[in-house]
Image (tube, rainbow, N blue to C red; front, side, top):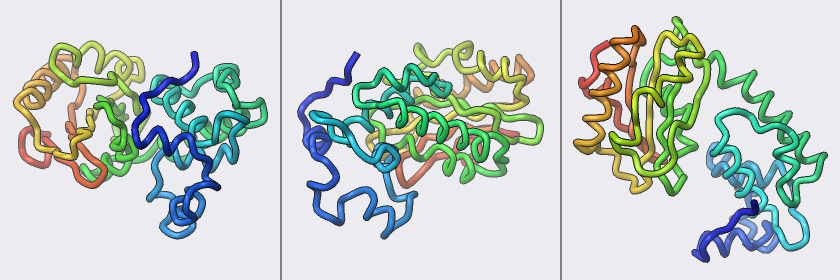
Length: 234
């Protein structure tokens, strides 16, 4: 199924190739000037893809790829990447190799010592327009085993059920879990619903013998840590 989108200002930008944008707005030029951390996930993928195809500029192909990666908690198989229109076999192989190398080199094994470490790991999700609820599995040394998207959309206590949050960390044989979700509004102050979700997840984790280390609410520039604010005792 091909990616569809509403015509907003962002979607008009997607229609443009990087070469048609002002030089200072092109992903590669911004990377050279400000570093890779200044780019969105879509722009990073656009640089890796290099080019699109007739009728689909690289920005749009990058957005379709990003949507696929957001939906899949694991690295998509090569044939799934190749099915994206404009994703030739060579590009699909390069993207698959990049994702696997990144997984091996940086995500797995990173040690979480403080809320800032969690924020650095997940802040790239902050530019998504819908809330994403994430779970992070940790081993006994608080090293990252996996980062997963549990839900996409409205975060509330009906959708965020402990069995959905802890199912895969239990399969990982994780010793501890951190959860987080973004607030697209930029306001990271927790609602009463956020407090209730945190209480329910902490209680469920205690029953299962899992350490529930923290719940972060985050935007692109800030975060709120329930542990740091004293609502979770570890």
